[in-house]
View (tube, rainbow, N blue to C red):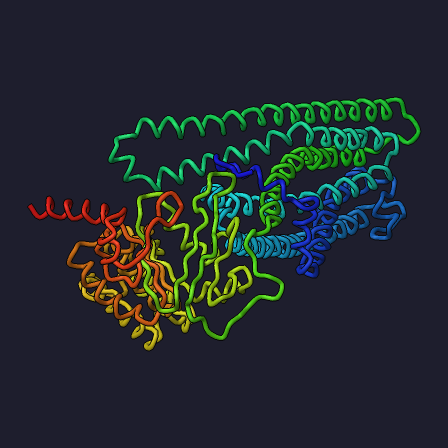
Length: 630
């Protein structure tokens, strides 16, 4: 189901498996880097647990004197005998200082190693995922681009992929932090006092269960948030791209209201999620506060009453130092759950898009000809966009190689759609389109489209130089070499001259190295069309389609372009869609379409003599030219 609002909800329908498992599959090539990063991260966390133990030992054995040997003596890092005398206590303190210094050195080195290794791996995964998503998007069929808006696609390629990188970059390390810190603290506290350790660790399973419920509560909200962001991006992209239209019709207030409506939707979704999230975190803080009070009371009473297993002063301090460190990552579990759900929502869209298969593909054993002659046959072709009314009905047309065919008819007659079927941007509903007698559905798509060039009414130019835009059609030069290769530059200039573009390009500030701006906004419509024609000619195709390609040029320039085109298409098959019938008067054959059907066909003279639809259009344009001349 197409998405008319830019939210891309429909891409979730093609999701295969759990999206986060799919994300982890991108980490597989970097497992050595990730493994070292994980080991370093655990070392960092364990090194952070050592200073509180050193403080507890210093209180009990250095400051207060004879006391329980403590955990470090049990593992062999300190002597277990009673320390008596200034010299012995000084020696013990020096050893504690040495151990502390070593712990901080290890912590610094492993922290650097873990962060570098894990973050660089996240960047590599992000790069691979964006490249694969973009490449897959490029290979989707035209019907996908018809049904989905640019803003939504940009949201997936940027916002969603970036969010997954952020999740891998931060939350993966947070997971290690939780496991290492909570696990390490649990072992140490249990060693000192199982009773108090049980009280301190009691919230751990509660927080785990609560986080699971939190995911259930927040999941619908974050799906809605991602969709509302995509809709907002789509609206902004449409308005920025249509800035000239908005200014022309003075629709500032109207568009402000439309953007405000999308922005309000996003605001409402975020506030609703914020309310749930803040309530969850507040509950976690209350729970950890209760545990702090219980440990303080129970541990204090044990010391007052002299109960068996009562903590020493140092051990009591150790408990509260660890409680502070214990509940920080525990509270972070809720935030991680929040981030996980955000990432999962983004992953659903990214991997849902990757799961979307193109509707137009090459067959298993494609036809790859050594050369394409250019003969085109439309055999009883019927076509419609989705479930709409047919745009073409039972169209049959035989175009020998090297023939120039002019296509005329009113707007919406099906002229542009007809030629799009040649390059197989869409497949017919019935009938077949053949090139050199072979159904286009049997061709290798790349091989077919390399032999077809299209110049549209509103040609798209990339942000770059004039030379780069023309050289885009040069199949003989690599992209990196186009601007520097002397032979490639000569071919660019040759094509520009053929398209009557060389004169105006030479007058530009930097000539062929002049930047044309985004979508070629620094050039006039006629200049853009001439560059597009040069680009198409440089591709040296067997079949050329000119879709209203001279509609935005003046009469003098049109005549110059026409003279060049007459020479250049002499050995090629050409389809010329024309609003100005003067453009196609010299075509070998003129085909007139109306409401998706061929109503007339013949030469210019034959059709005028027939006094039908073509003659009526010609007379109407002749009257317009007469009025313009007057």
